[in-house]
Length: 494
Image 1 (cartoon, rainbow, N blue to C red):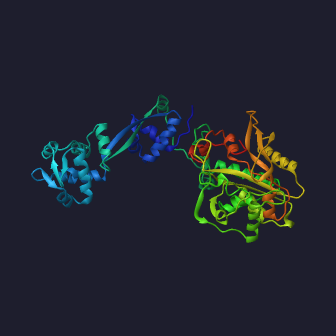
Image 2 (cartoon, rainbow, N blue to C red):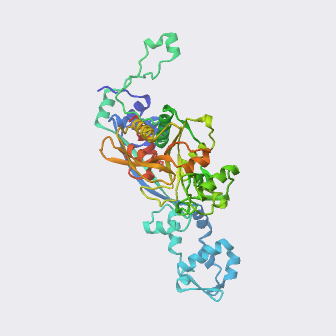
């Protein structure tokens, strides 16, 4: 078998008279250590050398350990201060300094070298012996300083004392010729081969006499991972593209809103439990600015006495409650803001958004504090419930769900309302994705000034992302595991 060998690979093969460490091999082959490591891996992939790896634990002194080997451990420095088997705490602190005094006291007590009594430290029997003989920690520290081995138990104790010692792993790689490698060396590795066709070779015509190194198209090459967007971003970008293709404009808005926009404008009662801290994230400063007075008054009226076709919530609406600032709990807040900014000449109008929402959820495999929601509205005097179903079927069809079904449902700010299910194309199971409906007059009239049909939907999107990528734990969407990000398939491209 013919092998395509780099000059560094040839140098290594010729230098391997016997098994050598990569460090030894660098000297024998006249190469840099990094070059030896790289070239020997290539040779191993071709079956010409074998690399054996040996890991050894190396223990050395840390900065504190070096200082204590020179000046002795704090408890030894404390023992030197004792006179007649005792010393006052004040005298010991003055002799050692505050920081070293605290460390010395810790180990004097922990090793039962001394006991405190009436402001004094008195040596124990162990302490009296320690005046004449080194403690186990001192002996172990000396052993490390002199390059001697110590037991795992001793290492654990010294490791628990700050930066006395540092434990590291030293890897030694030994390279040896395989039988195939020996055959190649015996047959001869040939002369010098050129790796590149240069401009000078072409200009002078020397390329005709030059021996070029052949390329091995079967050689193992490292896999390249080019930069790419996060797979969740890929999914949201695709959804944005779908809505734009369907003629919708994108809605944008802040993550932090007043409760007026997040709840009141959507006819959510100020007494509704969703507005409690266990469900919603409130932020500081607590109060935000409300929109113009006329709009606020219309929303107040809808809550207190209702519209032409409703009786409202029958309570005293509070401007102070409406001013509370929250992390948006749904992207429907964008729909409320958008509708309020429309004029008659803007009809018909179609808008969408893909954005993050926040709920005060208990964190588990199915719930996060934040999630992605797809929002959409169609403001048009001539649309009806059938148009809503048509938009939803078309959208989910573009996401790969050919079959969608709709079930009656209840939501505070839509009537009629429905739940959306799609049929999984491979598992044959129905998946629930979220809700949709037509905004109630109590929402539309205060915001728009008149009651006309507004189709609305806001299904969660993370469920679709998890299903597409076969992810069973929602936390995996954002754990940013590098291997996962490198190998995850592209959205809607396989």
